[in-house]
Image (cartoon, one colour):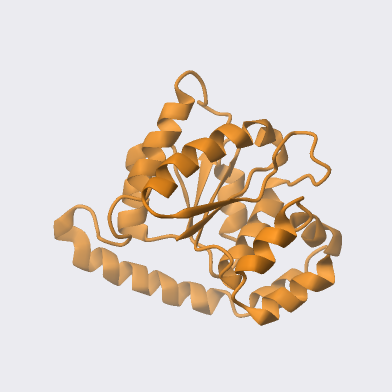
Amino acid sequence: MRIALINENSQAGKNEMICSSLKAVAESKGHTVDNYGMYAADDAAQLTYVQNGILAAILLNSGAADFVVTGCGTGEGAMLALNSFPGVICGHVVDPSDAYMFMQINDGNAISLPFAKGFGWGAELNLTYIFEKLFEGEPGGGYPKERVVPEQRNKKILDEVRKAAFKEDLIEILKGLDPELVKGAVAGAQFKDLFFANCKCDKIAEYVKTLL
């Protein structure tokens, strides 16, 4: 699995620490981590939590990433931004049990973490434990086990509801947004190298080239 890390501007100074925790766990399980930044608070390319959603949607819908780890001060804004787009199911995760149950019950492809609220002493340990439970077992396995069948049925129903709710494809949605907002979402220092090396959708790749 290819995992993308995205940090917005208010918490960009924590990128190195977050990436280190994520890589240690993910790589031990055979996954790959791509760090899309922000890498520091003074990066030339500044991401807001809204742009986290745009970038995550491009990565997930193009196949450039299979899973996105992101967040903001509380984790709420980034979670809402990501869930504003088709092809993205983002959970708000505060502790390891949130991570485990989100993956087992909801089988999503992104999480949003609070990188300021409650992020104090031992925060790096909590991150490590969250990532360990997040990537434990097969997603969608259900919790508790006696609830597997109805939970998997409900996930399929949710997928169908979201298909009906998002009638436009991603490119048309992005074209309807402020062009500078979308361009800023893909302006990161390492975006081009990471994205084009892993993108699996020619249509989205061609659209992204018009933004750069």
